[in-house]
Picture 1 (tube, rainbow, N blue to C red):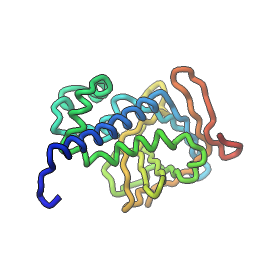
Picture 2 (picture 1 turned 120 degrees about the vertical axis):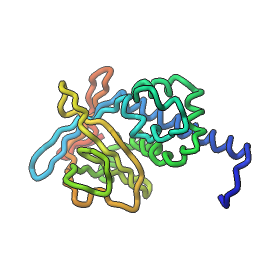
Picture 3 (picture 1 turned 180 degrees about the vertical axis):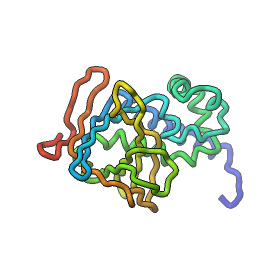
Amino acid sequence: MDGKELSPELLEESAQENLSILEDSLSAYEWLRKRKYRITLAHKQKETVIDLVFLTKNYSHASGVDKLSDVSAISGSSPAAFYRSVIASDNLKRQLAASTHFNGIIHRLYSIIELKDNFEDAKNNRHVKFAMKRGDNYTMIDYDYFIESQYEGDHYYYFLRYSGNSSNPNECVLISTFIENNKDYSLGQARMTLLRKTLIEIDTNNETVIYDCHGSNN
């Protein structure tokens, strides 16, 4: 901004806007945490089932909040404990929103909001692509699958990795996400066809088929 410092009033307005985005992202993630998505994919006539879940320990990195290094509360606690602290503390939310690094993570916060708003909408399935990692593709992220969602002209990328849960070897978690319109992360990767997507409500274990390539969808 031509080297000019923002006035206190503009700084306060920016912090309030940041706080609103952060709160919307946290609200979306809390909503997602109550859900599990059983996703059946196919590649070269081989079917793969993954259970996508959203754990407290994965929010900080997936959202980019762990990049706000000028907020001292981020260091010294586990990612899960830090997430619970953010949920419980309005003061900590304000500290994060006032970070000088906040603008660098806004796109990742929006990605989580978009996932909550659109992942269960069957009409959007034709705009969602799945892929399995098969080699390097412009990123150092250690992932197993990714989802590309096109919404209102933007490309949202969601990187998934097996969680290592011995009781459910199909369990995957969200480890990173961002908006990228200049790179195609699917190049050279194994495109997968979505066969079925089922919502499982964690509290009740109720199941709802969101999408089935062989039948009617919600």
